[in-house]
Length: 160
Figure 1 (tube, one colour):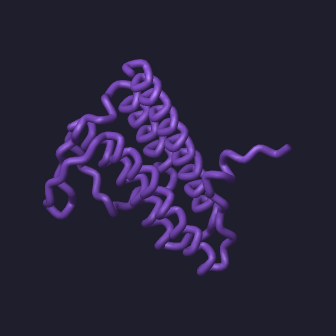
Figure 2: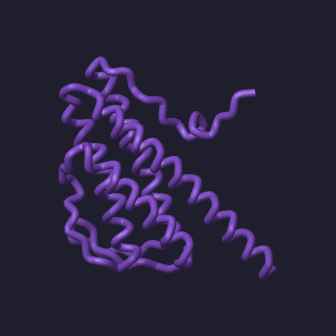
């Protein structure tokens, strides 16, 4: 039974590494797309900043570090790729060094206190990013910009 649990944890960690790679990859693609657009849609710029800021905040909560990141703050697009990369590597370090079942107590931006496992928080980071990239795709369409295809299966697809 102990061996089964050991391998189950390893498989779960691999699953999260893949999810974070996907998140990192498509966050960068969205940042690149926004950088290439003259006068990118304001809503899309706000959303990609929110994605990156939220990831940084969640990492800080897991690591029990103070942060001065505003969840809706705006950074220049040219700075976001570096922040996204730091977030990605910090999350990989969390996966490599911390117990997924560990409970993290944190206070949200509204002052409410909660407890969640590291596993649940990292799943939220991945899902939250995907959700808001979908909103960015919709905003692109509303502004007559061809949206990026950012589906997970598209990321993992292999041609025969």
